[in-house]
Amino acid sequence: MSDAAVALGLSRDAAPDRARLASVAAAEPFVSIEGLVGGYGRAEILHGVDLVLGRGQSLCLIGPNGAGKSTVLHCLFGFAQVFEGHISVGGKDITRLSSSRKLKEAGIAYVLQDNSVFPDLTVEENLLMGGFLLPGTKDAKVAAERVFDRYDRLAKRRGERAKVLSGGERRLLEISRALIMDPAVLLIDEPSIGLEPRYIDLVFEVLTDLQRKDGKTILMVEQNAKKGLEFADIGYVLVAGRVALAGSGRDLLANPDVGRLFLGA
Ligand SMILES: Nc1ncnc2c1ncn2[C@@H]1O[C@H](COP(=O)(O)OP(=O)(O)OP(=O)(O)O)[C@@H](O)[C@H]1O
Ligand SMILES: [Mg+2]
Image (tube, rainbow, N blue to C red; front, side):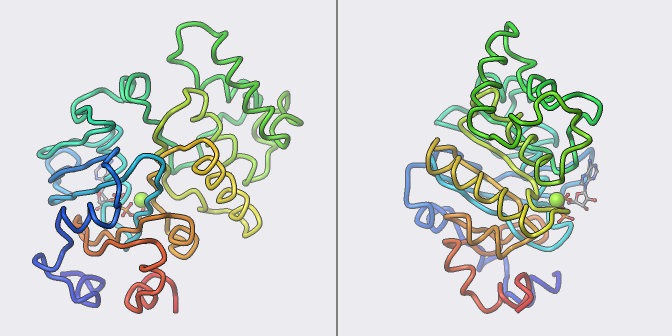
């Protein structure tokens, strides 16, 4: 067992069961993962992950490096293999849908962990790339205008190449590009990574706004556990491919083991 698991006093028996996860969400499941065994090639990384998230709620996965946090998002979006288990959104089984159908039909968008703007395209062109699955270019243009109406920072630089943006503006562009398809569910891996504190605050303000005003359901992985748990309604600690602990973001922030292991307290 990993140090984190030992420190959390975790055994497989102590892991939260589905009833516990449902009570933490205290809402009808909108995003539901059941018994997910998944990984890459022959490597099994997730050994039976469950997750329950209500519509319009936010959930943050924290845990040590290599625990499989990104892999949960990858399995949801179709970037990693699901060996066993089921994933549903809005009551619809999406386990085996292709990534593009997840985006187009199931309303799930994925904001990549890695820096994913196209540096030599303009801000506007980058945004329009988010609409590559739309039937014509008109819908993407309308959606891009909505983004510009909302984020003046991007509107002011719409004609400039993305490489001149600050780190925070780039992250905003990455998130906005995912909004072009008007997804119900946003999957976001490490939104604060590599950003200066003031930009971290900006990104979390944007996400809070998307959840509160637009009713987006947000599933996030965040290395900055403090920020992630302050933001999210629900927190899960993932250790060695299993959910070791689940609670409200506030409860996990107050948990001394979480504090010691993940909050630098
Ligand atoms: N594309 C891939 N192909 C093969 N193995 C992978 C791939 N991506 C991740 N892994 C492996 O899966 C395991 C879990 O990785 P994952 O990226 O999900 O962890 P994580 O919890 O997100 O870690 P971090 O905090 O470092 O981002 C690691 O052992 C990693 O090497
Ligand atoms: Mg990761």
